[in-house]
Picture: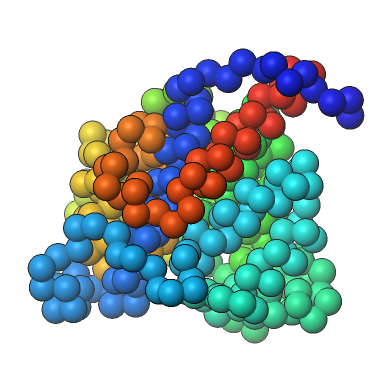
Length: 321
């Protein structure tokens, strides 16, 4: 493909929303990670009697929990390779697992361990699914789809395909892949300013997605907050519950700060739920919707902002050769 022109004009709102999506993902993960594994609001209150109101500083030598770390590695792979490259992405993830691995679940650990042994990315995902069937429905594969939405914001078909493929590297269940595709498409619609995006996502999926995913999209527009599948997953597992919860907050008049503080203390998969909801709310409201003190506490914030800029620039250039 010939090199695109260097003077592609970027919509400032698109840039702000792209930054908001990536920063919202990281700050949501940073806020929710400390309460991960406590399962219930009561257990979280016992462990954090003053509440959880601001992101905690990460442990020394481990700047990002798995949701943020693997998403940022996806962004770097997209930029370095110029496209979605499953082999390159899986190798980067496996290398990160070997040197850090904070927060990684069983399915991801097994599949990336197989990649490190030389297994192909999709075969590794299938083998991990066979060994840990229930864990193939984890919601962490959704956060990693966010950089794809920035890179392929001009090509929804390509976006949905790549989002499902990256999920399959570690979560081979069809429902997890469809949930990741739906999340990527929702992020894309918010990036381009479509506030009425749920029906567009359903249309893009062509009603061919698993029933559990389509029903989650339907429920998200109609249920109340108390009905969200936060502490226990719906049919389709945590991936579907994470999708439903994030879509709900993106379609209701809740600020990013309010939503993420709630999710960090609501039980369930707090780190992932807050990361994915943070990405959608950041894409909806732009970087200005994130509390400045939260942004200041993100490790490597300037680099993350630059990743977002470069991803949307690459997507825009591809649309205007």
